[in-house]
Length: 67
Image (cartoon, rainbow, N blue to C red; front, side):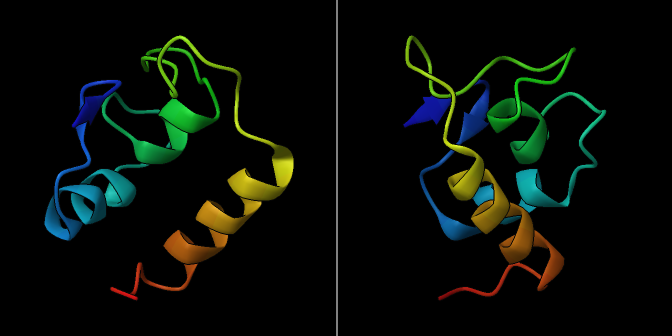
């Protein structure tokens, strides 16, 4: 599945998108925060809750463990 031009098919793709800084195209964080220059995710849905976004931010800060 691809959402916001980010492939969510495997951990390696998600990890790569997580490593891109928020202000840059293809950033996982940029897409879920609906930052300029990124395609908003989830497509045709509501923005994730602040709590969910914080969880993803924390996961990225923790080095994106494969858990």
